[in-house]
Structures are given as C-alpha cells and as structure tokens.
Amino acid sequence: MDKKPFIEKILVIENDQTVRDFLRDLFSMKGYIVKTASKGREAIDILSVEYFPVILADLILPDLRGTAILDHVEQQGLSTAVLIVTAYRSIDLVIEALRHGAYDYITKPFAPQILLHRVAMAMEKIRMEEIARDLSSRIVYATEEERRRISRDIHDGIGQSLAIIKLTLKAIRNKLIDSAEIIADIDGLATHVEETMEEVSRITKNLNPSCVTEVGFLHALRLYLETFSKKTGIQIHADVSERLSFQDVEQEIHLYRIAQEALTNIAKHSGATKVNIRLDLEEDHILFSIADNGKGFDEPQEKGKCGLGLIGMRERAAILGGKVYIESLPGQGTTVRTEVPYGSSKSPGVI
Image: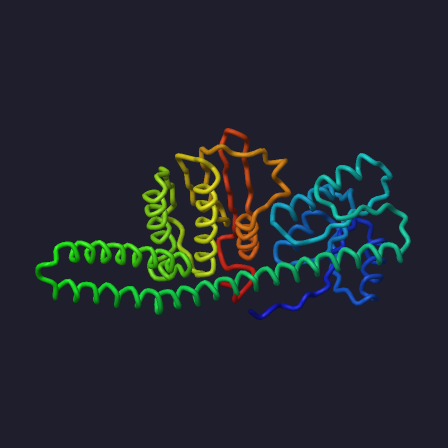
C-alpha cells in the first residue's frame, strides 16, 4: 500500500522560445519541475515516457493544434489538467478547446500572477483527484480483505458446524431400525443440510475467489459463467481470447469482480435472456465487454444515478489504469465495456 509522492511537474508546450523560456523560469521560481517542448509531436513523445499533472499548451503549434495534445491525454487516460494558452480571442476556439477536454483557457498577453494562480488551481485539482483515487484503492483493498475474513469465518465456523450436523444425522439414522417415518425425516433434513453446505460453499467462493489465483482467471471465469447460467437460466455466449496471459494477480481479481458485478446487475435488473461476453487483447489494452439483450435504460437520464455496483466497477478499472463505459437504450439492452492496460496496475499493493 505504499503511495508514491505527488510531484508538481509542468510540461510547457510553446513554439515561441521567448515565451517558452519565460514560462519555464516563472514556474521554476515557484518550485515546480518544468520541462518544455516547442512542437506538438515532441510533447507527445515526452508524454509517452513521463507523467505531468499539468500541461500548458499553445493552441497553435508548428506541427499540431493544441487540441491534438488534449486528444492524446484523453486517449491515454492520463490524469492531467491541460491549460490552453493562445493569442486568438475567439469564443469558437474556447468552445473547441473545452470540448476536447481542456481544464482552462488563457489568452495572451497574460498576467503572470493570474497564470500562476490558474496553474496552482489545476495542480491542486489533480492532487486531490490522486488522493481520492488512492482512498478508493484503499477502500477496495479493505473490502477484499474483509471478504476474505468473512469467507474464512463462514468456512471455519458455519461450514464445519454443518458438516458435524450431517455426520450426526447419519449416525442417528444408522441406529434406527424400524422407524421409517423418523428415518424419512432425517433423510430430508440431511438433504437440506447438504444443500445448505453447497450454498455456503458458493457464498465463500464468491466472497473470496481463491480459484482465480489457483486455476487462473480464464478458467475461473468460465466456471463462474457456467454456474451463473445454470442458476439464472440466462444463456451466455463467451468469446474469450486464449492470447491473454496475466502476470499480475491484481488484474485477475479486479476483472473477475467486474464480471461478477456486471452479471449480478443483469440478473437483478435487466430481464435479459442472453448475454454476450467478449474478452480480447487489442494492442496494449484488454477489452472486456458484457452485453445483454434486456430492457436497457435511458442512459442520459440515469447518468447521475450510479449504484454502488457501477461505482465499484469503475473504481476497480481505475485502479488498473482503465475505464468502464456503459452503453444502453430502452428496449435495446445494455453493454458494459471495460478497457484496461495489459500489464501491471497503477496502484501497487491493492488487491
């Protein structure tokens, strides 16, 4: 659970060398670590190997528009605030930059104190978001630990007690000779105990999916899908790539939990009869989609009504450096699409 320190770094992307040097010196004097780039592609190369909480980018660059930097930040899922700086005073340009995800928009000439204030606000926003993600990771970690504890308690306590009851009933039955009615009652009770033991076993496995680490994510997922289909009667078609080979157990646990939560929501709310699951590798990302043919919902109206299940899925995806997308329309089913980097998670120590 070690947390990396937050480093206040700024990438300045500006083609005018005089302005670029001024901004570098201005922010360096305030204690920021500053790196500069004169072109858009140079900046993208820097961003591919180094993280910056704040980017200050000119809107018009020699090779790219500043919006290309915004698009790169969005595509890479970077937690970065991008401030666009330009000499063009046009509301259309402001709207364009904001639509591409700009945090703020500043026109030249600018007052240094105002610029420093805007950057400080952006830096604080990213710092607070990082604290929130770290807290979310710790909550998920604590939840998993509590699940394991409850699972052990159920297995060691209730599970063993039920096993003793079952053996005692068998011993009593063997002592009875001519009491057919009592024997029938004992047999019925023994069957009920056995069914309860199976249910306890199912609950403990769901609470603590040790099978994921024991048999691997792909095999554990197939077993879960088979059990889910039998229990709910929902047909499942799974297209699962064999190319995936997980080196990080954290990825396996979180993806397994996302599948559990998505399917639980389908069983409870969708009224679906079929589910299509796709798990594949595309370039350096894992694509995991779960689509049902249920009643769906009006996505814009439901956007602010995220239940705990969806919040949990998004938190787990965020821990892995990815995102969860929901696509739904009334009467046309729902698709839960998860995209995470194929590799180690971004929050070491969280399981």
